[in-house]
Length: 140
Image 1 (cartoon, rainbow, N blue to C red):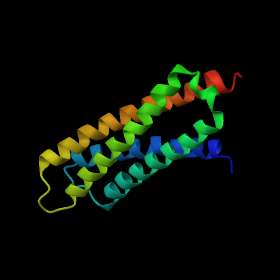
Image 2: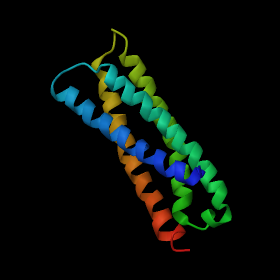
Image 3: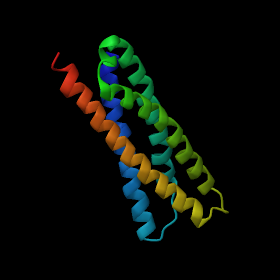
């Protein structure tokens, strides 16, 4: 399978999983429920799929070579993709801390705040990726 096609499939999961996690987290917050295994699963899968999206994105950019470097959006897209690995790692670490019985409300608030930032950035990342594909690559 072509790595570019694999990247396209994976990035859609990288968008929908964190967004679904945000909806799930807000539901738990509004109903005053503690996050459960489903919450943890969505968190850790979001982290893994962001790593996979970055890795496949690297190979996709190698395939396009110098052509990709011509796009101003590409540099922001690449930098943001690398930065999001760190943000999603922090999100997964906060979720791991929520597993313990001593999990405090400030950890949940920090988790939720970081999750909102992560979802906003992944949506922006998707917009940049779509712009690269539809405004540049498909027109050449």
